[in-house]
Length: 156
Image (tube, rainbow, N blue to C red):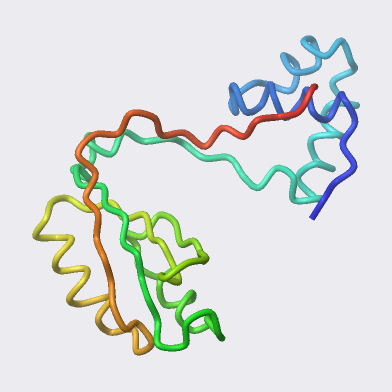
């Protein structure tokens, strides 16, 4: 999906990405526009699914989610029909991201758990129950150097 975004839309996205809690009044002041015009633009960006939502970033350590792992998943049907598999993977609460990938593996999952024992439990009780999964390869992260959801916004 490509949305036609002008420089004002791009600037709104940049400002909101820097501070999702920015008030409409502050946004309008920064853009030197009327608050009603800014609000209308933000609502249009939401309707067009350019702005997908507003979230709070939580320190995983603060809520005992200390282990970060990436699991590469191979399925029996390879690059074939993956609807039921992606749906099942997406329903696992500890799975933060599911990516359909090219190469030997079919998916890469980003998973956060409390510790190695809870990761093992997830693998044995959740992943193993998905019929089309033929194998997995797990990589445990030792240190996260950079982790953010920021999107590079072109010349706003």
